Amino acid sequence: MQRSEVKEQYKWAIEDIYPTDEAWEKDYDRALSSLNFSRYAGKLGDKKELLSFLKANDEFMKLAEALAVYAYMKHDEDARISKYTSYNSKVGMLFARYSAEVAFYEPEMASQSEEYLNSLIADKNFSDYDYQLKQLVKRKPHVLSEGEEKLIALAGETFSTFKETFGMIDNADLPLPEIELDGKKVKLSHGLYGLVLHSSDREKRKEVYEKYYGAYLSLINTITSTYYGNVKKDVFYSKAYKFNSCLERALFEEDVDRAVYDNLLASVKKSFPAMHRYIADRKRILDYDKLYFYDIYAPLVADVDFKMTYDEAYDYVIKGLAPLGKEYQALLKRGHDERWIDVEETEGKRSGAYSTGVTGVHPFVLLNYQPTLSDVFTIAHEMGHSLHTYFSSSNQPYAKSDYRIFVAEVASTVNEVLLLKFMLKEAQDDNLKKYLLNYYLDTIRATLHRQTLFAEFEFKAHDLVEKGEPLTKENLCEMYADLNKRYYGDAIEHDYNISCEWCRIPHFYTAFYVYKYSTGIITAMNIANRILTEGESAVKDYFAFLSGGSSTDPVSLLKLAGVDLTTSAPFEFAMAEFDNTLHEFEKLMGL
Image 1 (cartoon, one colour):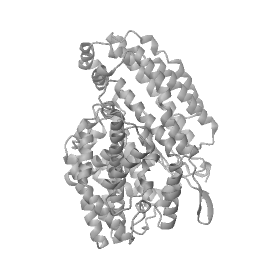
Image 2 (cartoon, helix red, strand yellow; image 1 turned 135 degrees about the horizontal axis):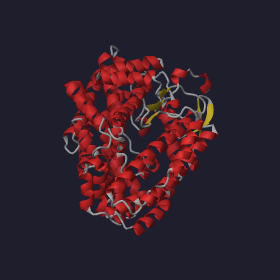
Image 3 (cartoon, helix red, strand yellow; image 1 turned 60 degrees about the vertical axis):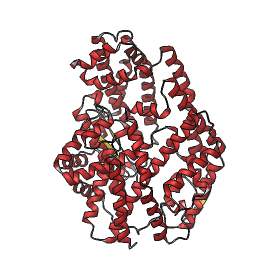
Image 4 (tube, helix red, strand yellow; image 1 turned 90 degrees about the vertical axis):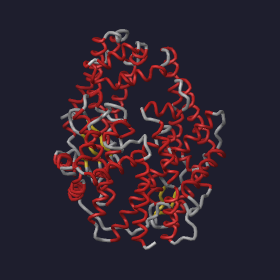
């Protein structure tokens, strides 16, 4: 389908950002001409000059945000249009010039006395920036001299090559072979691998599994060297910035208490028996003598007939999210009626789904809707992101309106859990109930359990290098194999391929990122349970979190919603939720 064939009501109202490309170009020129922040250099010790800088910076960033979002949304509508590729390049150049213009800010602020910085925090004129300033005070011991910072910046260009090299290996040079699918020869790809692994054709699953890992194993020496270099880079940064470990530095940058990370690993380890039972159940249901990792995504329940048009699905999501109240439902309806959403799959359009936003406008969602149950959940998920953006930007000054990555997946997952609970409650058909329970179990396994395994692996890898030990393909594969056996148990065969799974995980090149997926789903399960059991008071608390932006640290924001990740309680609830869901599934399956 061509974009010109799509009805207007199913296209996002991008004109709400800029009515025409000419308006974008005019604002781009205005943004370029406003890049004169260097005039503030050396003057930040004066409160009046500092406040003027911060407000000017806010105004520039609002403008740059609108330019950037419009450019990539237009590009995502149809990547074949070179004009919008050019727009994206121009935005990249704009941000590069901006970064150079404001490079003086942090070193100069870090050189100010703690007394001065604390006086700013107490000054109501700086209330929009108080959290930012508190972070500056905390960062003071870790800020280097101007000369050292310049050296680090120069090294940064070199250090970024490890991630870029893996990206080239993974997306360009990986020797993926052809396979036969539906009578046609097609080249194996990352997307096709995932598609086949979810199919019921075991022979084809085995074939793509072995060929996919064979491609990575053919380059394992290069990948090992690349990953080892990336970990050494992390160790260099942590030492340069005076941290005791890479994990300490990563948690400091996110302003997250170490107890959160420790609670996650400890609680998941306690849940191993339930996960091992689920893997054993999978083997029994599939009736295999031996279960392999290419069977881990195989469907346990026949597909359900749950086909809805986009409008039907959207109305269903609104109905399913009724526990969040009429205000939330009304905002969902606005999103539909005011064309926040780009619905149809068209030629040249970006695949997948995402949510984005522009200050002073409204959020936007990209979909490629298909009439499947999975895409109904995608609507709920992306609108969760969008309304989180809506509440934060509506209730916080610009400087505090953007929420941290640590909490980014909470609202989207709350919506998914609430919708699933609604569907389970409404379901009359046992097959649908089985399907939904299996969907929930697999979501928890993949988003909570597996990501925690990843988190423990990268901790061990960094710990080895911090102790002066090298990383080799042998010790990395051995370490990963040991973790896999502990996490998944004896009911599944642990072959050499799966011990090398670490080779193919792009997130390992952004260290200590993956654990946030686990804490995100744990938090969402707790919040959804509070909303369903406590009602209006829990919704009010949840809205306080949604409205919090980055007004304080993310762990404190989650406490507003009644979830304290520095204690074991939220983690224990999530593990119990998995166990209870498994019991219900086993009962329906007659196990």
